[in-house]
Image 1 (tube, one colour):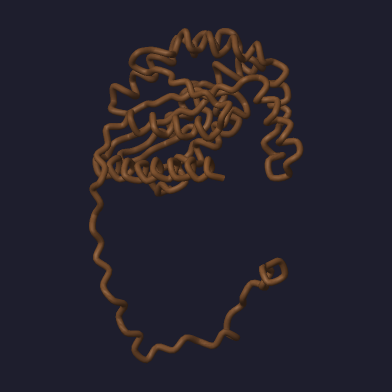
Image 2 (image 1 turned 180 degrees about the vertical axis):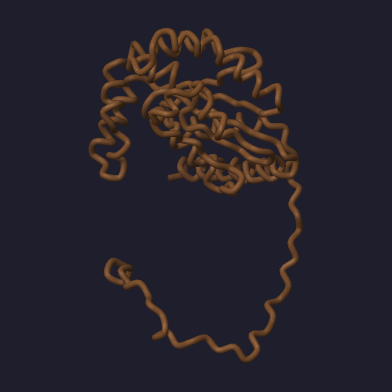
Length: 261
């Protein structure tokens, strides 16, 4: 219990800093792109949830793109990702990203070898264009051991709240551990560059991974904290002669809570 309280206190402190960071991003009109990639069940969704939990969703959104449509398949590969880039004052977290081509598409055979090689050539240039235009690009790769991944898959099988997280693709990816490792190694060889580096997060311990990732994110963005706009809240004005209508006028949801509490 003590360890849990320490973790929650540390997480809350980092989340308070994230709120200040977002305010700075908004005030300064900055554009932040956070790419979160990695192994299945490595903790990507958990860290994204903790990053965005207290941020204003108007200015921070998660881009988790579905399978491309037939039309999108005929576009330039990066085109649909460009449509989800942030405007000034916004933060966009890509839950999976254009790196799908270097991972699942490569391993599962969803792209041709020519398309894959073109991606490896174009991706560094694409990211340099983003950075050159003023976008702050931060890329995280979440690693997990095969033993821990198997443990989490088995837990999902037993948990009705997490069962949806398992798909046929996850099961097939579980059988192709080595292929995914080789694909990741080749992708890093081409796309882990000084101007757009990958930052690897050890994900076997979820709590440590979340704290480490958020702390690093905050250290990467040169925000100025501690400046809050003071809001004056005067007393409520008198209600005058207003009278609220009778409760019978409205439809209330049934009190389900009374049956379980």
